[in-house]
Amino acid sequence: MTTTSAFIGLGAMGFPMAAHLARLAQDTGGHALVWNRTPERARAHAAQHASTAVDLQDCAQADVLFSCLPTSAEVDEVIRQLGSRLRPGTVWVDCTSGHPDSARRQREVLSAHGVTFLDAPVSGGTNGAQAGTLTVMVGGPVAEVDAVRPHLAFAGKVVHVGDTGAGFAVKAINNVLLAVNLWAAGEGLAVLGKHGVDIGAALEVINASSGRSNASENLIGQRVLTREFPVTFALGLLAKDAGIALDVVESVKGSAPVLAQTLGLYRAAAQIIGEHEDHSAALKLIERMNAQEIT
Image 1 (cartoon, rainbow, N blue to C red):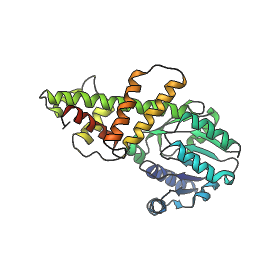
Image 2: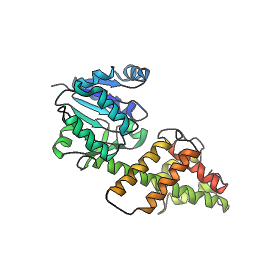
Image 3: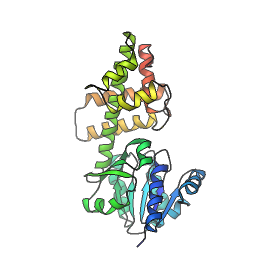
Image 4: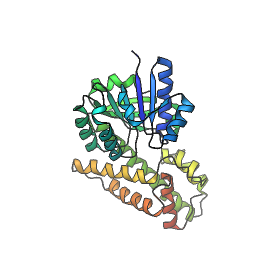
């Protein structure tokens, strides 16, 4: 039997992710539906990738429905609008960086319509989305996760991390660790700059040494030193994810003072630098604090 997929949310990540679903549909004789709040975006996707731009209600006819939206609140709204239009047997795969509590509530709501819900956020950035090499961390019953694996055409690695909500929890902790590494590297480089050290040379040494991280190896050199700060992941969304991570900490009465401090720093950066700036632009706040440009 051919499969109809639907992708809701064609942002910086969703647009290329949905392209892989469209290619899978072409290869298997299936259909790939796309919807975006801005219809022009969906029509552009259809023109470029041979998907089919549809109204939101039409997405309810999909066998596998994907969503990739800014927060769980937007997913709640889409669920409300689709409601009883959803077909029993549909699998809803939410790739939003959502909240674990929302995942459990959404699964319960959709279960009443006979729809399976899996929280399946992704990591790998826009480059990974374009290449189809994203890491997908999935929460839900193992049998349901195994059943949906063949449909995750945008994935390079799929890991079942636990029951409903676990995917969102892992994603939140992953992203707050990104924030920690980015901020710490920014502080260190700003201080070295004030010390008269060549920042580019220092970064080269760090990236060949034990202090390296994805932030130092990729983000800082490509975005901060160049002063380009291309917007692929908004600063405000990273602050949101750090907040979810602290909710995860609180839910188990854990102790994570470094993560708590990081949340405060990124909320401040989002307010001062701008929530719609790229997340790497958080380092502009460090530059102001030290009167030293990281370049």
